[in-house]
Length: 234
Image (tube, rainbow, N blue to C red; front, side, top):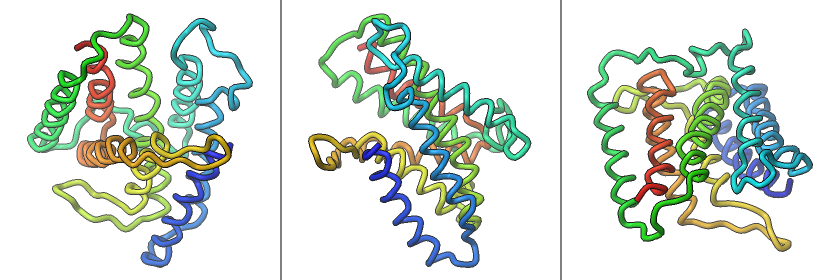
């Protein structure tokens, strides 16, 4: 709980900065809704902050928490307020796919380079299955899907970056993604791992760009799967 509150505090602080900078384009209700959705996401992901035991019980990975959050946010995506197309649950891609595909394959090349540089070797079957599926499905649907849609409603001004319309709220989703991996609370204090924050937050910006440029979660999910999965195979 302290971890979630700390992460939300940082995002709320940057949100306040954005609200002052873009007064005419900021809307408080969707911003509060976005922060509330993050709390819901963490409750589901941690299985009620670990009150619900994992299934299967002998598993090394959080299958149940990922499945719970994915299922709930798929349901949310189909609510009238959202809609699957708005969230990015569509195979349809916006016209002009050359640059997105170049970015996508560039990301794959970077992920492959770091994977072959890793010396840990091939992972077990469960790890391979989990890393190629659950993180990308769960995290992309939430961060680049539902959360992004609400954050875009909170900060409506957009800047066109190589054909992708990026909002300040979109940048906050990447900030939160990096914090979710590199910032936490333990042993009576907050810990910040700048390296983990960078290696998750920076690719998150590129995934954000792919999502906004293509209008779909397809390429972000595939890239995310590769970023996690390639390390399990080499």
